[in-house]
Image (cartoon, rainbow, N blue to C red; front, top):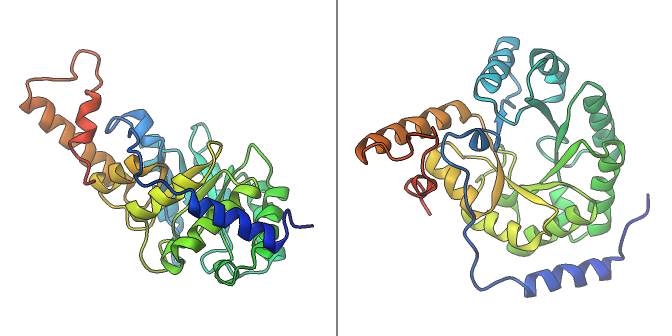
Length: 282
């Protein structure tokens, strides 16, 4: 597989993106708290190595009950999760090259191929961030493009940058390389490599990708306030193991506020859009 640009061309693209950064960032509209659209922003996640069959089955049951977008699991659990989610519209996401990102391209391709064959509809692959930091962009591109090649659309491909390991310039570079390789999302973190998602990094990532791409915030998103803050910064997907708690918290807050303001949002069963803003930490 040939690279898309020369190293010099990559640097020109990345430098231009850095120069074009806005002086201020827009605030995006988060879905209404606790709504179906809100739930569909959540990837319900269990990636611990010691996960048990019972835990994966519980993960799937919770995802079906809350109608989350996906369950995100390791390769060994994909087939089991697919079976458990039969009859629902919750899909299975599988991590690839997790969590170091330094696996060979052939290993990542093998994992991706097996995952898709087992029924995974989304892949969350870890970028080779040591190569990214060394500015070996052609190798990083080829790595992502190879996985995209064996997992074409409609499979959704998310590229995990591991932002805690990267400078601002590296984050921009990772976004532009993933975009060139036709990834669907750039994702902040694995949750296993230092600080997870931050509002600042989500804003940065959102500002340098094109309209065809999206941002997933993952790592340390545990509360509804944190969830809304990431959404307002530009994240359209949230990876968390706390999805059930976030939904309960959202519903509880909405019930309390609706009662306090005399039933705002009753009648059509949907709370006012303005209520979402009340729980933003940004």
